[in-house]
Amino acid sequence: KNEVEQSPQNLTAQEGEFITINCSYSVGISALHWLQQHPGGGIVSLFMLSSGKKKHGRLIATINIQEKHSSLHITASHPRDSAVYICAGGFGNEKLTFGTGTRLTIIP
Amino acid sequence: GAGVSQSPSNKVTEKGKDVELRCDPISGHTALYWYRQRLGQGLEFLIYFQGNSAPDKSGLPSDRFSAERTGESVSTLTIQRTQQEDSAVYLCASSSGTGFLNTIYFGEGSWLTVV
Picture 1 (cartoon, each protein chain N blue to C red):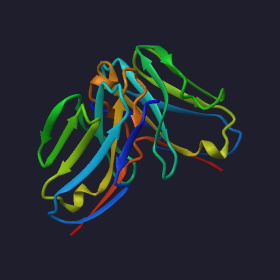
Picture 2: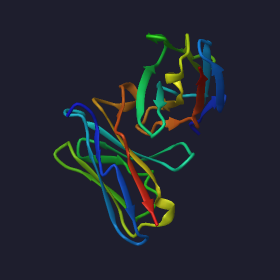
Picture 3: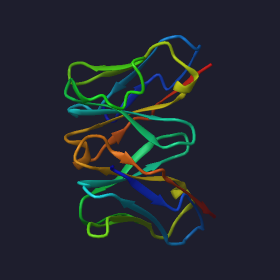
Picture 4: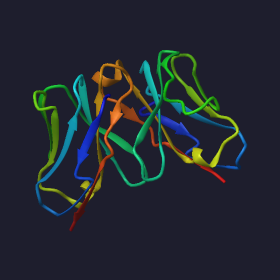
């Protein structure tokens, strides 16, 4: 069964803190997506990665294929980073399997 | 268009009525997806189109749900005889190729409330 699990479910941090959100998945993943969902529902794709590490601005995503684990990091967090972060696994078909999301709140 | 466009953005309907939700994907994107998200819950896959064909309809929750795509462009998700449990945001997404290997672009969603 294709499974994707995220932790933590909720995360509150002070502005400026370094944030890490974790995602673990079952075998067979071909690609892993990190998505950001803002209050009001809009979803933005942050990263798609199948190996290594990607960086965009203050966001960094890593994936360790051997450990079946991915992390999303946010450096110098800001209140506008407050959102739900979702990891989703592509297991070789078109049915992405979604994690339950991590609700991030950054306090000024 | 510049992004994935969905309409209506909000729809309130009476139980038992039919509703149609529309998605305009990014021009040239061959793959189109419909997802559902109930309040406070995660995303559920409904259906996927490659061109005008739907190779995978396994996520459609019941035979009251159907979807079509024409011209490798616009897609319509139809819910017949709506029930209160159909209340959710319905999200459309598109990508230029095989979605799990390409960036997926989401629309803003159609918020459906069945009363």
